[in-house]
Image 1 (cartoon, helix red, strand yellow):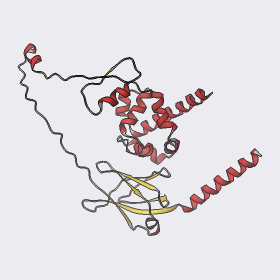
Image 2: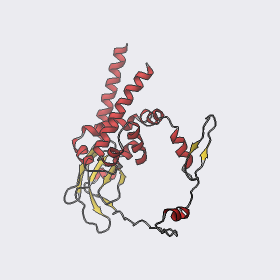
Image 3: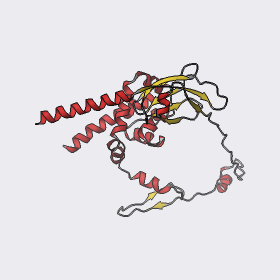
Image 4: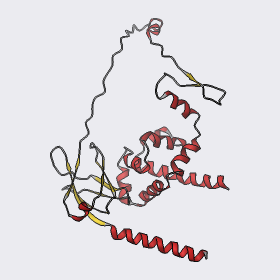
Length: 259
């Protein structure tokens, strides 16, 4: 009976995959600069659904396999990354779709001058330095309090982070997002995606796939015992490999815990 059930399940899976393959079509489009309508060369285009990627040519054109409702992710250094949902019209009409990317505007940070005049004498200057009070928080059920710096909206979350169980954090990410983790493993198998990630340091594509913020990615790697130097300086491909390795270790520990 088990063999029959397994055979039927395998047959259903093959049929589903075949149906999905039939829905896949070649999508032709062009990427331009929204400011002057000039074509953009070497824009990275990734189908987040199938985890396949391409790069635009000198005319800004590209072709990629997709089906309706797939999500395409466009990224280029100095431009705002965007996601586009594939429609039937985009698949039906060749070269009819134009994707516009907007250049990022970088603003200089405002410099605030403090009203304190320093003399160079420690005894005098020490008296002019403002004193910022620290606050101590108590949590029900815990015998000790926790320092959290200035009273601010993020202070309480800092306290909770200090007593947060790292295993719970990894469980919330890895245990509840198996589909996203499968996509990350698919990315490791695609040479073009790996080449793309090797040149990037913004974590944007990883964030889109995992549905987390950049600070969460840093937290994941920190809990997986990666150094701050690696977390700060590694390119996106190295980060991808590190998260995958951490996930594989997590699965082993989870199985051992269940036993």
